[in-house]
Length: 204
Image (cartoon, rainbow, N blue to C red; front, side, top):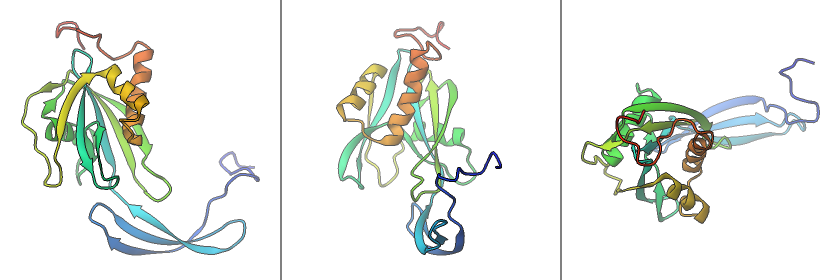
């Protein structure tokens, strides 16, 4: 058996027989794929939402505080606590998008940027990824530049408090939790993060 082949008793790829465009939903485009169940031969239509990649940012000050954003989310109909992030614009790479989103949503810029990797946003029907960035030495340098559909409030709190808000359920956005977990793992390993109260001379 080829090493790349799926196990006999494992899930198999579903052949795509046809594909047609659906409506443009502003933040994404729908696509209808006709696929075939590899075990039964039955065909069915599945919806794929074609979406540009996203980015989010764990921004830490030299005092080991994290920059959070509170905003109303239309999907859940409630105010959420998150980290800055958004869509990667056409022609941008993920770093440029991360720097732009941090500046626009929080007014902060940072002196050092570390790529944390990416995850599939929702592979059930999205085709995109979310890229995580860690920004060190974050400082307030600009006024906020919210989009017309945003009403933002910025909080700067100790990083450990953000982790506690995950445990309490206040921070519930899965992609935010993923980014925080990656940074928490680095912190437990004694890597990257400044010590609380680190001065500019001793910070990275």
